[in-house]
Image (cartoon, rainbow, N blue to C red):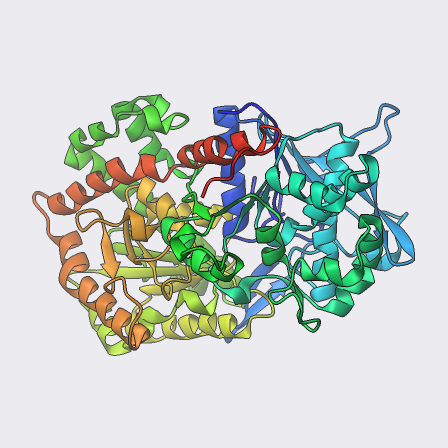
Length: 614
């Protein structure tokens, strides 16, 4: 693996519960990436934003409607260290805004050997409006979004320079950071006097773009007027006329009414591009095929690196101790070297007892959270205790936790309520469903999905066996993936780029029940978990997938969990062992980071970028 330093830019990082600068999957993935890079000693420096208010705390109204509450966090009170000049002053960099300059101060939040550089504009030297730019993650209007992305890309590059970092390669984890490409081109044009096209070629040759978005609606788009307000001066500094700069990010360059597409700009100006699963790579090649009209779709130069998860971070204490005993402690930080086949020799009862301990711990967390919600809504102590009384620590426990975007179809399980209620009513084969997740504050369709689940959970016929746990965060995420027997994922194929929560559940001995989308399209095998639907997109997909989900629950999953020999579901445990043994090393963040280092960081950091992989 190359030892040249790579800069890793991302809009969010989930590093610890005490540093709320993340919202969900992208940030969690970025945090796992840094932790694995530290383990492997892959030389990275990460760049992000120190959001003072972070993402929102989710609270449910009495009617089950999501409400957003923001808590102000002074950076001085967070696990951050100021980056200091030799004279002891905090390092600052400037941003050129219309008619003024804004200043960003620099913080550090390191992950072992990986420095994490975070920018913050909430300082007295800035205008009142500019101090709000880095307040809320994904908050505000489209103008706030373009300003945050200027802070990340342009301010982030200037922060690296101010701190003395000289990366050889640059990794854009999503399109939010794409303005760093313009800043790097500007440096070469102004400082090294290169012609624009030579500067652009050199920047592209050393840049990697990872897209996590399988649908065009997910890309950041900025209107011509907004772009002109903030980037007219950039065109001048690059020696370009305004329309030439805009055409770099327009789907149809000659259409002056089109917005600037951040993902398209990144695709056109990086030599290395990848999706985050095998299927997502294929979807991305189809999406951007018209950029290479002379090639077949399969020859479009967009590859894939399937996401992975950092085992030591997500595997619960019970399972970690079990793996230590049977695989040795090296499984955690060198999973590719562990003999995972030894999982198959773990005594059934020992594994089953570990799974039971994790499930009971999850139910304890769920009951506590439900009680806290009930008290907040005015319940007395007795009523608060009863809020989680319907949960059974010995029942088959199915978890669903993710962002409540409509395509993820969180309410697919509720499509035929009579079939679901019949499953819940079977006292001899108890099953329960735990839901969690947030909707973006502006996504009212997602909020309605949450409300629908909450309303269903209050039906006495559900017997407290369907619950929604508010304020999905790192603590709750860990408890859910560690304790759930089955992890449910129901995206509308092929709109899930990867979906790493299921990987975390698998590493804890949970079994995956999902549409064959994202990572499950390549990870699925009939003896490891279950596939909803037939892997095709046809007809009324919602109706077909709901029927498939119910049939799997009715005929395989619930009966299989409750079929016991001397108290142990032998066939179920055998499936858990196969899933653990085959999927855990394949879906580790160590494998992911190693692939990035070998396929992308090394070639991109070689000086000229080498020949891009196609």
